[in-house]
Image (tube, rainbow, N blue to C red; front, side, top):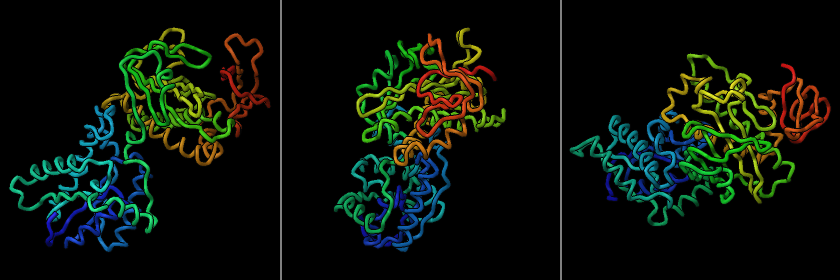
Length: 432
C-alpha cells in the first residue's frame, strides 16, 4: 500500500472486518466510503443484521456507507450453480469474490471513486493472493488503461489487522457471525455418485456434515420401508446434527423440526411458480416424518441417533414424474406440482438441497437455543392430520392401531389421537 490522497470504495464483507480496515485506510490519507454488496449471505435476516452492524461502524468512524439491494437468488444462479460441491477456498469462493468485487468496481467507476479495495483480506480464512488476482483481472477488464479506477491491494491481516478487528468489534459491541455468509460455508458436503445409503455414510460424520448421492442402493424410510429413486432425479441427503447436552425428550422432537424445514423450503421454491399460482398452504407436514403437497407425499425424513448426534435422513421427490403403481396415487414431486418453477431451476436437485439446508439451519438453531416450544406454532400451522380421523400403527402388522380424531401435535412431539398420546408409528387417514 502506498500513501496518498484518494477516495477509496471499501467493499465491506461485515462490520467487524471493516473495523480494522477503515482506520488503516485513513492512516494512509484515504477518504473512505464503505460498500456493502453481499448477496452471498444466505438469508435476508442475516444480511440485514450484518448491514446494521456495518452502519453502526460507519457512524462511529465517521464514514459514508452504501448498500446494494439483497439478491441471493441471483448469487445462486451466477455463482453457486454447478459449484455446490466445491470445498471452502475452492472455485466457488473465487467466483464469489469476483461477483462481489465486480459490483464494487462497477460502482466505483460509475460514481467517480479513485480506487476500490476489500475488507475480505483481514480474515485469516481468506487467501489474499487469490483475492488480489481476482481484483486485478476485474480492474483490467473495467479499465484497460488503468487511468480512472484501480484496485488497491491491501492485505489488511498484516500488522495484526485481524487482532485489531476482533478487539474493536468487542469494544463496539458488533455482532460477529460464525460463518462466512453463504449456506455452503455452514455445511461440509460429501457427495458420491452411488452409495449404499447416505444415512450409513453419515455414521462417520460430525456435526454439520452433509452426505449426498445421486443414487443409493439400500435407501429406506420408517418401519424399514425401502425407498428407491432413479439416479440423479431426486434428493438423497443425510445431515449430521448435534444433540449433545439436550434432554432426550427434546432430542426426540428433532424429526418434526427437520420436517418443518423441508416443508418451508418446498413452499419457498413453489412461491416462484407464479403461472400456477400455487399457495404455500398446499404444503403440509404429516406426523411424524412426511411432507405432503396437495395430500400427496413429496418428501420423507428418517432420523437415527448416533452418539451425541442425530443423523437426519431426507429424501425429496424432485424430478421424478412416474411412480410404481403401489404408490402412484399418493406420491408426487416438485416437477409434478410446480413444473414452471422446476423448469426454471438451473440445477433442480441442488436447488432443493440448498433451500432445505438454509431452512434446516434456521429452524435447528431456533430449536436448539429456545426448545421445541419455539418451533411448535410453525409446525401446528402446517399440521396435515389435525382434525382428521386417523389410525396410527406401530408396525405394518399392528392389529390394534390407535384410532380417533387427531387433536394435533403436543409440546413433547407426540400426537394426540382421540385423547391418547402416541409417540411413534405411522399415521393413516381413515376419513378425508
